[in-house]
Image (cartoon, rainbow, N blue to C red; front, side, top):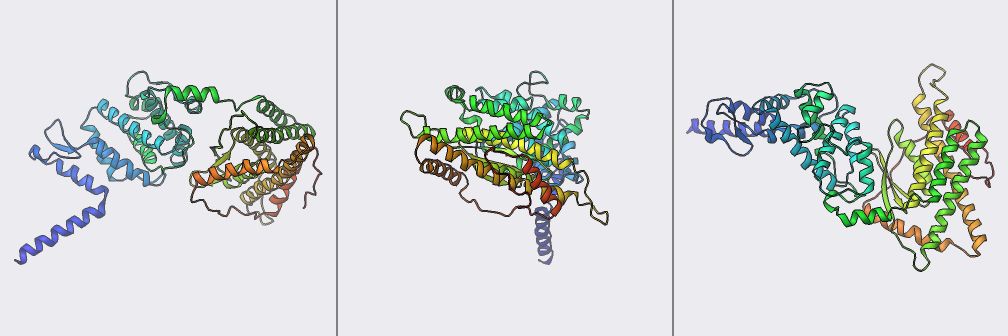
Length: 467
């Protein structure tokens, strides 16, 4: 009786240890499979090897290894499960392994698309989490997944595929892209497999986010044609705005840059007012507000995002910051989003150019203060730009009211209400958070001065830069 109780306790302890070890359970299964055992050991997650031994199924081990790798920090050493993955792969042909890798990536990407992600965002997430080589592999996997689709994607999706060079199968026909990718990257086949596992780990851990574009499951020929016919965002006004900002960026004379940027801002503000007035007329197509995500890379991503928020607020556009993936969601009418994007790109370049001209910053004791200086610079620049854009927006409204002879605030209020409703629907649990703070007085003053030099409206009074 005592002996039987001891056996039961040991068995229970073994089961508890198995649950704690996690990946070790897979390795234990692999060790068991090395013993000469009858073929009836085969079952879920296991397959028969060429030598008559039951081994873990490669697909099962790949997904398990990728799940574990997705939780591992960048640069952390591989665990025992990596050895298991390689050993199981060796019991299959390289072609068989490559086809399984292709299948798993295709299924995972399909789930990721349904979860709101877009090709460029996936590539960026992999780069941020793992690095450029993993990102290149992810782009190849996206190209392979795209080759499986039978319906043409919408223009925005196609543009991202084109930017990623993922519209064609560069490795040729077929689904065996892992081997050619490893060869092109100067890696062994095994190293390529491990890269694929780590990349897959990032994809498996991507959360569901707000959908900005219809996923492949919702594409149709009719929808694609409708989207192409309705894509009139890049109209004559925005073309002129883009040209003016390009001139502002290209000139070496500050007064010329001011004039070009001021004219661009005037056109943007008046265009938004004209659009709002037109929405109230009979027969005008009332398109609802839309959203897009703007990637803002480090360093100082949160401080840079404050500049985008300032520009968006002055143009009636809502913003939502997602720190985990360093992107800002902007919600508004399509033409306004395009204008905000153009102005943000231009002003961010001007701010960065002015900030970098300072070089390295140290305190009297020789300690580096570069980071605090630059973060404070961006925040001060954004605050000052926000003040000036607000003045420009009010002036554009006054000019429009004088021209048409009536108050336009009710029209603009109704427009803003639509945007607020769309934001609340997309982000039902939205809450305000605190951003970075200004910690360097020199950086603050320099940022205010730089924003002053980037004057945006010829009708504005030049404000005191120390105000």
